[in-house]
Length: 273
Length: 273
Image 1 (tube, one colour):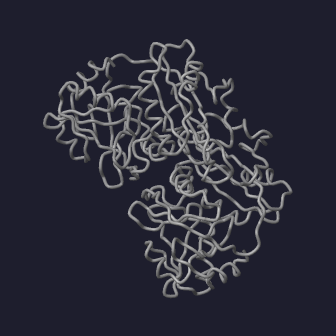
Image 2: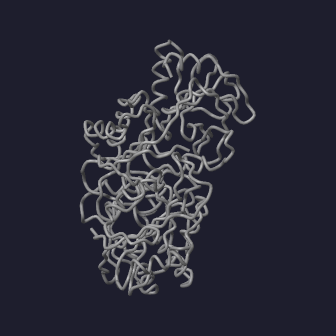
């Protein structure tokens, strides 16, 4: 569990994070907003541009005017301070309106930054993964963006309390594999790197995008398509990715076991993570 | 737009609602909680037991220990004070944990009360209704309860800004009619009262439950089933319901028009709303 180090709302530092968020915040009422969870390494936000681009895309889909980017950069720098390693979370919510779902016609999104403690672990750590029974609903309107409606992920993570299990894989309501609860998933089959296409649900992870780009650069065969649980039986390798933990080779998924494979290793090395 | 009159968090009155919610609240991060919107009339919460029962059911499904009911009643009375007419909103969120989706294994839900101004309007007011293009995703796990993941309703209400339109009807991703953005919907066809069964999405409204009970008491034929947009073409009457506005006869839905009908009138009279 990572300790909270600092927080800010619209750029105002919060010395007591217990008492700083507005009760009118629409994130609180409806999950009406977006978030990004960013790795701070050597004092910088890793891949800020990718996080920012996804945030802008989310704002566009939800009809929230994005906070001015220079303001976000300044607020991020302000809260990170001189710290070298940390996790920086940004929540952007639709500005307050009156009571009810609709919210105001326009207005710049509110920004909440939270900085958490983080100790980086060197090298890719193998992951033990299970299947979750909680499903993801399909709604193309909300697919891909990192919005704040995350009850499905919360319920999925609550399916296990055994700390030796690192992640759970989730299916959608039709039975397709979508992702981990807090990661994207890849497998290798017949020499091709495959990952779910996320057309109906799931989040377009920044590490997923980096892996796909790098794999194409390395002339690997890359396939984004619907995946099913049985595809993992035939896979020669599987790994999960996210912005904080990078690439983690899956060594166990239910009864299926793998040794850490070359795709995960080579991609991690090429990406210097 | 209703003015905010007062607020409390875990029973502590908030004199400045701009600065009272914890930044760690899981409702803010993930929509990890539930809400109830209750009518205050003659100084009392109307149908408190129904709201409370739905809240308990939601807590059970999300695995949140519900706030002790005597505490909720005391907090509600504290914030309503001597006021006769108002709207009382209650948000219950999972207690804080560390960073990440999972949250703590157990612990009593946090309670946030907000009291809003309300001027009751006498008698059933006809409603002009449109179709929304934003769809509701299907996920039986979350169907029926009033959880805080409400982006679909937010986006649906943002489809129109014409104040003469009172409500929008939403379909699910398969095309079934589910409800209004903030109401349940009924129609009358071949002398039967029909309403969507909400097995995959939608909210079990407290006014919907009152209407169904009363209709059965009055020996009306009642059918809960999948409804489709074309069912409204053949309907002799339609109405929308919620806890605040009661029963509102639909007089216009797209190109279809109705006169306020006897079912809505008789049910409203029998329910004394």
